[in-house]
Amino acid sequence: MEVVVFDLMPYAARVDHLAEDGELPWPLERRHFDPDTAVRTYADHLRAWELLDELGYDGVGFNEHHTSPYGLMNSPNLLAAAASQRTRRLRLHIYANLLPLHEPLRVAEELAMLDCMSGGRVVAGFARGIPREHTVYGVPMAESRARFEEAYEIVRALWTDEVTTYKGRFWSYSDVAIWPRPVQQPHPPTWVPVTSSKETIEWAGRNNVAITPGLGHPGLRDDVLRYYASCLRAAGHTLTPDHVHLNVDAYVADDKDQAVREAGPHLLYFNRTLFSHGNETEVGAQRRTGYVSASSLDYVRPENLPAARRAKSDYRDQTMADIERQAANWAWGSPDEVRDRILDQARQAGAGKVLVNLNRGSMPGEMFQEQIRRFARDVLPALHEYEPAIPESLR
View 1 (tube, rainbow, N blue to C red):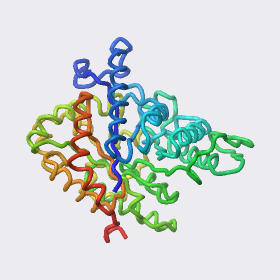
View 2 (tube, rainbow, N blue to C red):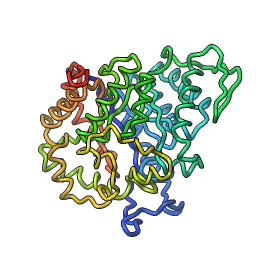
View 3 (cartoon, helix red, strand yellow):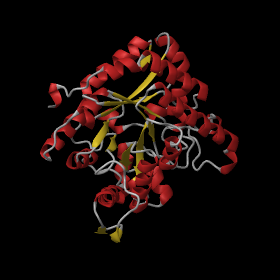
View 4 (cartoon, rainbow, N blue to C red):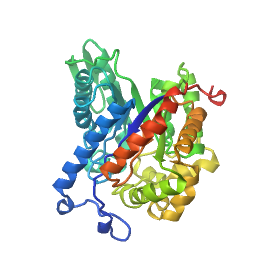
């Protein structure tokens, strides 16, 4: 099984003292930004990625978010380009370019450049982005899905056609042949994050695109995978371990208590202050804007609907006591527990890749790097030895 470390790259200083009535102001004004902290953030994470390469991890995952200390990867392609020049073998998992917000010709060109610069190490993820980012870029949320699907068609055509002509609802091109082209043929591997939306699962099944299923809730993840497998079959494809990129939070310590004591405050800060900053995550509110459809959760079993609806109070009102209770089922604790819990989830999902989150919130750079070392020493070998297979329940 391949192991990729997913890195949100949050701003390396806490800003929870700025919260008003439990909410971090949005927009967060210029006067609150410290350039030295940003410089340190980028330097710490670039060093962490070099360490991933040195210690035998298979990849690093980049994201795209805007206008928030939640994450400083406004351009995942720019960060991946930097990583490509400081690593030798690490796969560069873009998670993901937000297609509704950007010119698809530019996205196709940048990813082709990056694949050449890295010697063919790009894994190209695409996503719609969160509502906050549509607001910032002035993109109507009701157009988000149509823009995403059209942009993907264009990017794929630009990578594979001899010459591309495309007339669409949002973008049109005539007689375009991009230079350079990707090293990987016919194009880099593609994937899409799936939180719960039925339409995204159906799109991924039609297009034979790999997914990252669910938000870590086991029941919701099972629902996503079962529906995804059926959509793949309907389109003439077969679910394989390469289709499933499992997202897992992990923290290696001497025992569970130490893991909660050390990592818990950083996760609490992330959930209470950073997650949902300036953004509406609750499905009901997203439906009112047209961002998701009324039927987006039709396939989800009733017992898993609360996880899919993502109530803001689940994050904003969280306490250390909640984390201590929930961590009983997480891959937090001794190396043996972390290993066994990740492998158990991988077997249930049939995952060929695991995306491991080793840092949350404002975790100091040296603490993140120590986790990279400890995970590499005590857990990574067993994950590499595991031979993934699709469980009978998903065939």
